[in-house]
Image 1 (cartoon, helix red, strand yellow):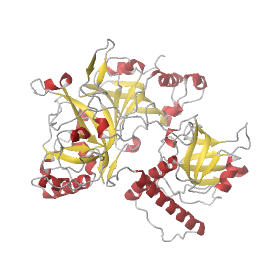
Image 2 (tube, one colour):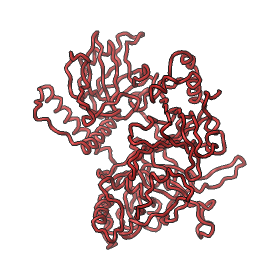
Image 3 (cartoon, helix red, strand yellow):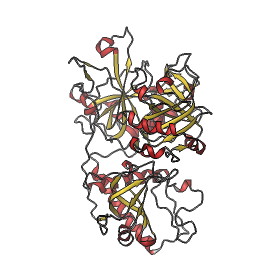
Image 4 (cartoon, helix red, strand yellow):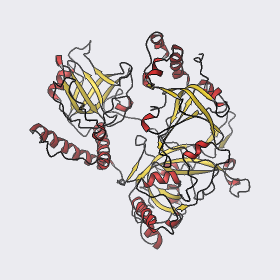
Length: 621
């Protein structure tokens, strides 16, 4: 299909000279979390786009990188997931480390078409008139969208082969640094666990629901509002996030306007109890289901909702659910009140609920309103909620194989955990590539990311005073000026150290130092570079300096690492006692560096590349 006027395909944009401007359309194949520059305070957001021509090309087949810089996070493009289509006008091509990249500027205009709102090619005829695809962007851009652009967006959805989902993580460190010295192992692919639901094949989490799909939902009732003719509005959650649903602002973001009740004030308005954000799904319930909800279901109850139709009605609206009368069985009620809490789906929901409220209350401790006296019904609801929270806490504790360090938080919680033994695939199953003629060879490394639960059993350098070092310049004189956003030339020291991680269940977990044989197979060395260390230490940690002349910063560092690794430092000094620390969750990325021609290790690794690992995504609270 021909491109709209004024646009070029991504393969053409990839070859454009530096500082040229392009208008492009592509499918999102990778998304990274927005990060804030410590130097400028601006937000940086990176994602990759792909179309058919770039996908089939030799260069850039993994996607064209797009990077936005904004003073406010709310002004960044609303890209949420793989499969979204992004339309960019007047973006600038700039090379970064010699790789073409699209960078935003003050002229750049953006439209994001969420995956759920893009129909299949069979429905494209409905968008050849006045109908417009739902998109996120400035109203002027939405209104000026041409029919040719709409048709191209719909066609892209079917043409581009989406890769497997990746963790949302910062980009890997550039190749060529020379401080990597700790031993490493081999990584294998994470296992995909099949879901065995109590409620059948149509069961979905709220985060998995999409426009024009039917789903069975196991949820907890947040609120319900009776309407005329036996209908009601039902607000439910399973504590999974879906960015297509309505956003419920927390109290600290409220502008003073109450949310609940009708526009004329006829209905009694009640404070929104939470959860907040994109965690609550609104469902429009008609008879006979509405009559059952109005008379049998209370706030806080767990229910199974069958055959819920998901929809996005029009531009500017959000994803909602509909439950209407079944034309074939008019008296059938598709709402089931769940009284047993030992159902696996409810147990998992309660664990997610506990994590959410623990994080929420830690960041925003609840403030009691002494002037508001709770009613008798409110007291009953509070007592019931307290009982549910206590049961949730007990269920969460029972679900853990080993107690997790509650003072360390890890991102990407939706990704399944993978133990170190599986990451260290010493048989090179993941890295062995077989050619059509039957010959095979071992790849030096694979760009893969994992999430794991581990203990710290060793670290390098030996002294904490050496955790802050002089930075290594890794930019050529001709580097893009964009690099200066995330690099401060005036900084005299940066964090850099390595950790030896081990499965919590490993038999040698109580040893202070790695054993040379069997224990090494359950251990992996990871490097923690400056940006990842800053994320690990949190906002209350000072910038690194010479730790041998700054005892205050050294004391803070020791306190932070003690939270992470317990008594490891003390036991390492006497080499006789057992290490005592709790496992924590973190993300690990595999990458590689090319060794110099005269490096003695070059002949011992495939193709002259050494495989390494880095730790990211964990924060000490």
